[in-house]
Image 1 (cartoon, rainbow, N blue to C red):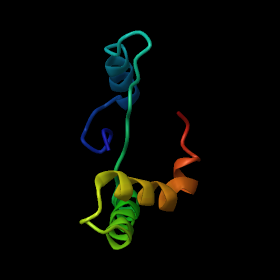
Image 2 (cartoon, rainbow, N blue to C red):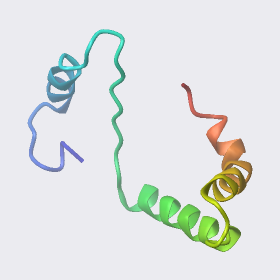
Image 3 (cartoon, helix red, strand yellow):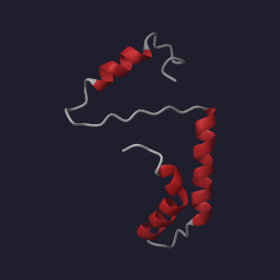
Length: 77
Protein backbone atom coordinates (compact mmCIF):
# COMPACT_ATOMS: atom_id res chain seq x y z
CA UNK A 1 0.00 0.00 0.00
CA UNK A 2 2.88 2.37 0.70
CA UNK A 3 4.18 1.79 -2.80
CA UNK A 4 0.72 2.48 -4.20
CA UNK A 5 0.68 5.77 -2.28
CA UNK A 6 3.68 6.97 -4.25
CA UNK A 7 6.47 6.25 -1.75
CA UNK A 8 9.46 5.64 -4.03
CA UNK A 9 11.27 3.23 -1.67
CA UNK A 10 8.88 1.55 0.78
CA UNK A 11 11.68 -0.61 2.22
CA UNK A 12 13.69 2.51 3.13
CA UNK A 13 10.61 4.00 4.79
CA UNK A 14 10.08 0.81 6.78
CA UNK A 15 13.75 0.80 7.84
CA UNK A 16 13.41 4.42 9.00
CA UNK A 17 10.33 3.60 11.06
CA UNK A 18 12.00 0.49 12.50
CA UNK A 19 14.86 2.64 13.82
CA UNK A 20 12.32 4.47 15.99
CA UNK A 21 11.42 1.31 17.90
CA UNK A 22 12.96 1.08 21.35
CA UNK A 23 15.52 -1.68 21.95
CA UNK A 24 13.57 -4.85 22.67
CA UNK A 25 10.42 -3.18 21.33
CA UNK A 26 8.10 -4.54 18.70
CA UNK A 27 7.19 -3.01 15.38
CA UNK A 28 3.89 -4.21 14.00
CA UNK A 29 3.20 -3.62 10.34
CA UNK A 30 0.24 -4.68 8.31
CA UNK A 31 -1.20 -4.23 4.93
CA UNK A 32 -4.76 -4.11 3.83
CA UNK A 33 -6.02 -4.76 0.39
CA UNK A 34 -9.36 -5.92 -0.95
CA UNK A 35 -8.59 -9.60 -0.30
CA UNK A 36 -7.34 -9.20 3.27
CA UNK A 37 -10.10 -6.72 4.11
CA UNK A 38 -12.71 -9.20 2.86
CA UNK A 39 -11.28 -11.98 5.05
CA UNK A 40 -11.22 -9.66 8.06
CA UNK A 41 -14.81 -8.65 7.41
CA UNK A 42 -15.85 -12.31 7.28
CA UNK A 43 -14.11 -12.98 10.62
CA UNK A 44 -15.95 -10.05 12.18
CA UNK A 45 -19.26 -11.31 10.82
CA UNK A 46 -18.59 -14.79 12.17
CA UNK A 47 -17.61 -13.39 15.55
CA UNK A 48 -20.81 -11.37 15.70
CA UNK A 49 -22.81 -14.50 14.92
CA UNK A 50 -20.99 -16.54 17.57
CA UNK A 51 -21.10 -14.19 20.51
CA UNK A 52 -23.97 -12.95 22.62
CA UNK A 53 -23.40 -9.29 23.39
CA UNK A 54 -25.11 -9.72 26.76
CA UNK A 55 -22.33 -12.08 27.87
CA UNK A 56 -19.34 -10.68 29.78
CA UNK A 57 -16.29 -9.67 27.73
CA UNK A 58 -14.29 -12.63 29.08
CA UNK A 59 -16.90 -15.10 27.76
CA UNK A 60 -17.09 -13.40 24.36
CA UNK A 61 -13.30 -13.32 24.13
CA UNK A 62 -13.01 -17.01 25.01
CA UNK A 63 -15.54 -17.92 22.29
CA UNK A 64 -13.63 -15.92 19.68
CA UNK A 65 -10.31 -17.44 20.73
CA UNK A 66 -11.82 -20.92 20.37
CA UNK A 67 -13.26 -20.09 16.95
CA UNK A 68 -10.14 -18.41 15.61
CA UNK A 69 -7.57 -20.40 17.60
CA UNK A 70 -6.30 -22.49 14.67
CA UNK A 71 -5.57 -19.32 12.71
CA UNK A 72 -4.11 -17.52 15.73
CA UNK A 73 -1.79 -20.47 16.34
CA UNK A 74 -0.15 -19.89 12.96
CA UNK A 75 0.93 -16.36 13.89
CA UNK A 76 4.44 -15.97 15.24
CA UNK A 77 4.77 -14.21 18.58
